[in-house]
Image 1 (tube, rainbow, N blue to C red):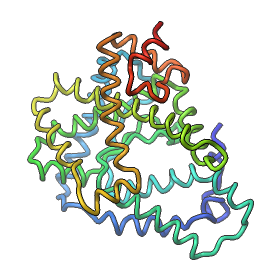
Image 2: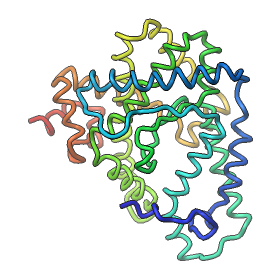
Image 3: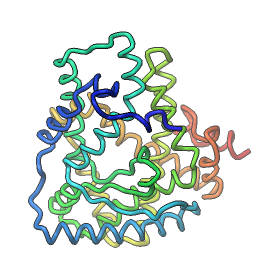
Image 4: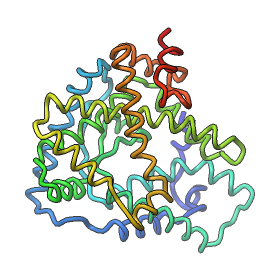
Length: 323
């Protein structure tokens, strides 16, 4: 049971006493900016497109991976940058509640300026990420929202315009990636609770070995992100005519320099790109050696997730899990 499920997210919550989340939202929106101007009819068309694309993506991903999707059908929520920030601020509050409770036991009161400083820092990070993210599957949503997939409309439009992409191809490609995450957690119901436990452990690293924990977390996230990248590219070969152009555009968008590059390193954003690449190599190598059924053993239990070092050496995972 989620210990944060019954928390009152008012000033009575520990997370609200630790940080000013209204400030986080305000700063986040200011950093994000509104994005490109999109006429109402184009926004409506995008909502219709993505509603259809996530349904098609669910069928394509399930068919390609041989994984079973349960629960509600996948469905799209096309949002602005401010909406995305608001959703992630709420999620961050839920995740921070146990940590906040522990910290405030030692120091029950917290100066207003300190709360605003933490909120401003969180808002600045979320504001920047809201300019970069294209889609998201939020694994910590309540059960009634199972299958909901976020798409940041202004960012999709911005990329399509900047690189001259075919909107229907690009939107389906992004939908395949995010729906793959939805399929992962549907096929492995234990994974959601396990990931929540890893997050809790991460927030308690003051009393654990942070290096060991980070290695395990990196291995798991490399698997999830790499698998989604592998699926989107392999499924795309058969269903998206302009796939090479899409891949080139995404690679170009990832290349940043100067202050932005240093900021990405400071907040760990560059690690996510590394997870895509190393994880996709792991997934591809394993499937080439033992097939899709052999690879899908990874979804059966936490013991079959790749351990630190196995993402870079798939033969070790194969020897341990498939013998």
